[in-house]
Length: 307
Image (cartoon, rainbow, N blue to C red):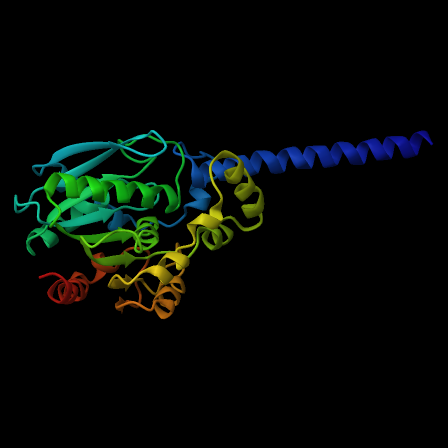
């Protein structure tokens, strides 16, 4: 009897220890994908996509953008967070604006910098924001297009109030930012003339399963308790209600947000759309790899949808 009791207690102790390890690892994984302050242990493994030449190009663009004349604006999110936006008056008119939305663990300059000359040459001012929990904006949790889309709608209202009800906007999002612009596609108003979705995911639940594997369930439960339900990140219900012209961009060698997301989103969309699916291109690198083809597609949309 004593031996059986010892074995039972031993098994219970082992189970408790295993549960404690799982909880600790899950919390680290949660920090890696959901919180502003990343996990020093797991973040390098969860966020493993890296191309040094591409990132050097983006940082060069960021440095260039920071030197340009700009106006800093602030708004407050529905969550009470102070958010920062940056307006770059390439034309000085404020009537045609490209609104750039960055992705996961990024900030406005590293995404918008490489597009400054591109849009300036086409007569567009640039507007870019630091999303919640990024850059100079406040916040601790990423919304995976839920928080970000609600905030971007507030920014659009701010731009209308600041520059006039007749402004023409392009929404241009990358990665998480691409899902953000799709998430708001049914609510963004007539000022938005078309949308560019570069490397979007359909649903953050699918993305998390792909990135986290067996840790997905526990991490999702943590986020449900601390922030929101990931089911709210599915962009497809919004696309069903949208009629905005959309350019779907996705690299066929994307391993961060798998390429299958791009064709799936486009094939199910009933509004006006086109695609740029370049071979041998990794995550959000289509403009980096082939700016001429990318530019030609955007020019087609500008000619067609912006008077």
